[in-house]
Length: 306
Image 1 (cartoon, rainbow, N blue to C red):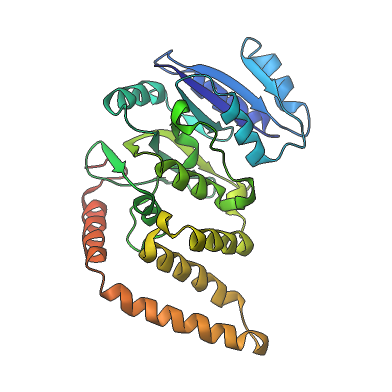
Image 2: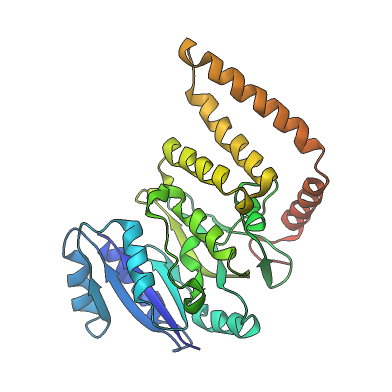
C-alpha cells in the first residue's frame, strides 16, 4: 500500500514552506511527496530549490486554473492512493501513519477523509471541523454526505484538503472545472456515489482560514450553478437535501433582493421558505439528528470525539 501526497502551490512560498516541512516531519515514511506549482511567478520554485533541493518539483503553466491543476495531479497519480494537500495547511506528524491504519481497516473505502483543527487568522481559538461518536464516521451514500454540508442539524465535515483517494477507483473521474467554488462538493458527491467514504475522527491537520482563501468570497452565481446541478442529479442529494439546499440558498438571496423589480421573485421565494419550515417539522429523522448534535456538543471537549 503506497501513498502519493501532492502539495498544490500558488504564489505563497512562506506558507508552502511550512506545509512542506509538516509533511517531511511525518512519523511514518510510507509516502512519496510531490510539489506541484502553478504560480504566476518563480517564488515558490526558488523557495523549494533553496530549502528542499532533493524534493520532486513539478512546474505547471502559470495560467493553469486551480481546478485544472487538481485534475492534472489526479491524472499523474501512480500510487495506490493519493492526497491533494493545500499549500496553506499544516499536516500533523501522525497523518500518514493514521491514514495507513485506516486504509488497512477499511480497504473497501474509495476515499478517506480526515478531521482537522480549523484555525482562523482573526481568532486565537481553534475549532474542530466535525464531531462524531467513535473513531470514525462511515459515509455510505451521496445524500448522506450532502446532508453533512447543508442539513439543518449537521455536525461538520471533513475538510477537502485532507482527503485520500483510491487511485484505481477514481479512474478517469475528474473535478468539474465548471463547478466554481462548489466544485469540491460536486466532486465528493461523485466520489461517494462510486463507493463508501470513511472519515477519521482524530484531527490530522490544521486547516487555516485567512484572507487568501478563495472559498471565503461570496459567490451567488456558484450557488445557483450548484442548485442547477442538483436539480439534474437529485439522486446525489435526495428530495429533502435539495429542499434544504434551496432554503440555504434562498435565505442568502432574500437579503440581496429588494425593490419593486424583485417583488414577484421575493413572493415566490418566501412562499417556498414558509412551506419548507412547515415540512421540516414533519421530518422524524431531523429530530434524531438534532438530538445527536446536541449530545455531541454537550459531551465533546474541544475536539475530543466520543
